Length: 612
Ligand code: FAD
Image 1: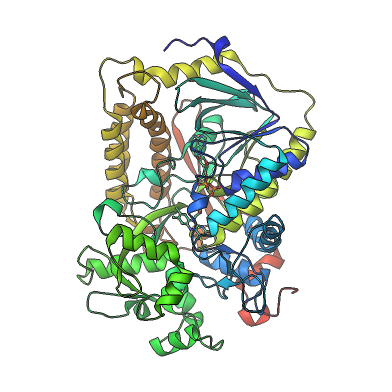
Image 2 (image 1 turned 180 degrees about the horizontal axis):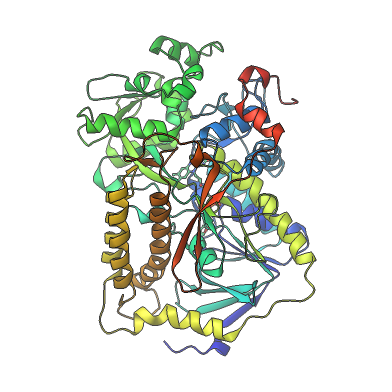
């Protein structure tokens, strides 16, 4: 391919948002409402992002289903779920603002399920004290994305679809644009911009068993890291307890927590409801102690405590793993999830239509009559790009980030439903941050041709080699390394081994060869996304090796339990000037008194309605 810089297609916008999921669209709407010429660039088609796949709901303390709920209880639950490692201010903003963001969506046309009084209905999810998830059956993400898309397009945002961003461009320290390519033609494109918002979602494709789809290769994290931003909390990778385990072709596909929220229970191969044996001390006062009490909760008895199936995801995932390890797993190495014995068929089909069809079509299982087989699947990255909690700006002037590609908000473990509300709150704040930043610029940054030329040369390198490694095989090797040595449980030896293997893999990846031209060439797409995956995988493994304790989603066999000292530290990853990765322990700020009181207080002092 010989495309000269001057012939590269170029667009001018005030702001470019990379990613058209909930975070990107919400940020774009806000940027546009500040009068900025705003474009969204997305790897896939508009409307196809993880946000659309979200089933269970968006957490917000609306207090409709239980009037005892309010933002303080939501904040407390989020901090406890995140094992107190969450960025205090982000967790506060999230809990305070998510209800308003849900109401705003409703004003823009989103239709949520209703309770008999006509208010937005809310369902139960793990780690949330009260039923808190606003939902639309089990297709909540679809409703949210549809609404944001309609609103954004009518507001005049530009959309560049099937376009992969590869590199951020800078003039001295500040952002000046984005370099990318059209996936169909393989032609390169430059977007000149005063600010960029990264909203590229997660990186699940680094692991073999994952609920994530093909787009989730950590591109945004890698681009931001390469441009000089920091990554934070990368060791915390969430394994959702209930992915499909059978048939093999669909292994890892998500079974929403909504199934347990609607009453589904977990059983081992002996038919035992084993979760009662796994309640951690921290959650004992909030968790039912017997099937009878759990049943009363299901029947709506407000004095009963939540069933143990609704403990946080890290706890449930590890419990299933342990049952399998001691020989009590299902035929395909998971646990049984049973809703048929708890709810009637009509309710299951009405509340969980996607799950009903998913199991019928993919596994030939009728969940209104039969049990599902489920097991842990890599689902979500708690870690990601470090941002300022108020403005969402990174360490690179003009580079903002929001949504799953950022770190900090969820600490060591995210509560289900807190991602959809995170996207809305921090997408909105990122847009506001961009408005202030761009408004304060004295001049427009320039795109430098040598950066564009380097990005172009790097991108075509795999096409210009006669011989080298196959990108698909390198990807499989990467997934094997992560699945073997950086999975739900980790050890120092395993992580050291993973680093050694990743070093070898990096060398191999630098020699990847792809046949053919750049048009319609999926092997070339794979080669380009591998660069991001390898950087993200290395950041996760190195951060996991540094954190010598077990907390939330990070479990070290050689360092059992939480350690107080580590509760005061984040692990931060940066790119050094020689290109290598630095991994440092950084002191966390102490919480302001008013938040510390809420996080560590007893529930009784917080309950009392949404106006508290
Ligand atoms: P996404 O929605 O993931 O969007 C990322 C965007 O970035 C996409 O448009 C993608 O094409 C684009 N992109 C990526 N790389 C590039 C690149 N290099 N160039 C250009 N574009 C790029 N959370 C909840 O709170 N509640 C739930 O019920 C829930 N259910 C879920 C169910 C499933 C099956 C999955 C997978 C996740 C679920 N989650 C849920 C998590 C939640 O959906 C995601 O964390 C969230 O949607 C991420 O949103 P986002 O806007 O950050 O990114």
